[in-house]
Image (cartoon, rainbow, N blue to C red):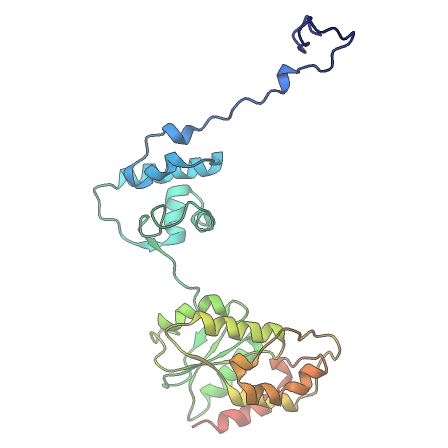
Length: 282
């Protein structure tokens, strides 16, 4: 094997009858090339040459962006949604979203401004049911349709809108457009399931919304206190601090549901109860 250069033996000066070690040349790891170090980057991407590591896929992405920047160097580029720019430059509409979660996106590196694109919030499903400045947001779709019908037939009512678990990502739409009415100028009143997930959605949305205040639709949360508790002894409420969103009084009113380790879904509140609530709106 040594004669065939498959292995390398230690020097023959060793007095040991058998070598203490051998070397297998085929197992030596050649240093990996770093093509991005010598690549002709535009000034905007010059930082890429100093990266210690870069996968082949990310290098290919940066080359495509470099080419796009060169092609549009002397042009005024219209701003488009990020998925459109991603499809144009990288051939995949969601690739830029992936890149924003890497270290390539940062101040002084890649930015959406550099690529002349912007991220719009997901649209908020909504229906215009009245002229008021407020919006009612409910977690579940069936409840949304029930309230849409009830509010459409009422004399005094706000705007009704529906959403679900994606609502925290959609709060930006409140300041952009809801049902073709433009931004919400009043308050967003939120009602969801009374369970840990429903409270988490409400808190996350409240934290995410900086332009439009999100408040609990108190009367709708309150009527849940009188409904039969669902799935007793199965819901873990530990670590849930719903009083931050609902307030101490309403949180206390619903304490017996938490103590029973249960929950109340929106759909457990009868349509007749919702109709009574609508009649009481002013």
